[in-house]
Length: 297
Ligand code: GTP
Ligand code: MG
Image (cartoon, rainbow, N blue to C red; front, side, top):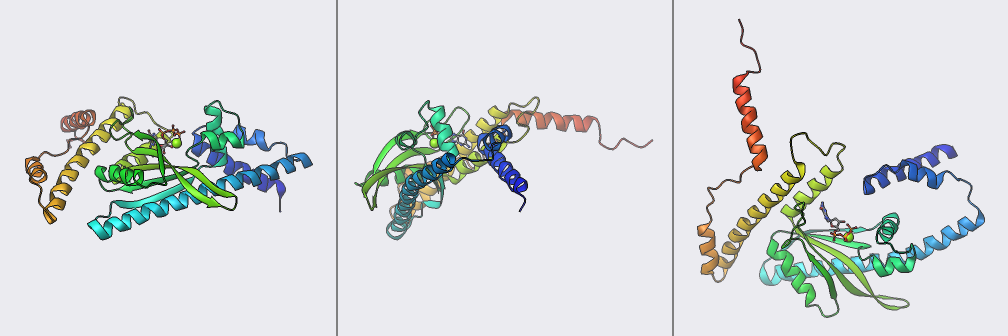
């Protein structure tokens, strides 16, 4: 096997994933890290120790993440049986990569040690729970807060208080007890709960952020994204009103829910973000003035 070729492959892959995660040119960084190809025995020992220690820690977070996911699935099943509700649409899980753990420590101004990683990085294990309605997000948080062996810490409610760019989701850290050979450990897992609609916005916004062109002359992309987020929030409120009215109808119709649904003016169509609407109208007017196919003659 050609050593140069495989090393270049490693550099290329590392550079691509670094760039994807950090949105900056990772080529120079990865080249600097790999240009010294001959490792001393000390380097190899240090790598072995680091790899073992990191694996030991990471597998604890991985176990905590799996157990937390099982709790959420149990909750969903129980709600299905008892209340004919299936609040959870699906769950995604991810472990933070070691480089991004250390990049975050650096950002926080902390030492790059394994102790600091455990003390300060709360999102090494992460779960994203996609639910149908806004109320489901808060209900799940409430159910978890009532499980007496869990400790819910640092709730960031970006639904009640969206980020300035329009990002909405309910974030919190849950510490879950996990039993290992050397005893019980309380391990933090970051949970992000968001509705299908919030997930739609966040995925596209994330995707757009990493596009090579993030600016369109004459269009305030940030303002448009924020406007889209507000429209989505409005649509969600209406869907929630309908869901409440339909759901409560099944057992004991709640007059208030039904009244709210009746008051909704469904004929109100969702408007396009204002600036886009104006531009489309202008373009339409221009088209009328100058036809695409010049008149014969
Ligand atoms: P980081 O984890 O380093 O981002 O810092 P933090 O934990 O203090 O941040 P926060 O709780 O605000 O959000 C962390 C995670 O939420 C990110 O890793 C994303 O998955 C998601 N997130 C936060 N803000 C945005 C946003 O503006 N757009 C999108 N698409 N996702 C976001
Ligand atoms: Mg985070």
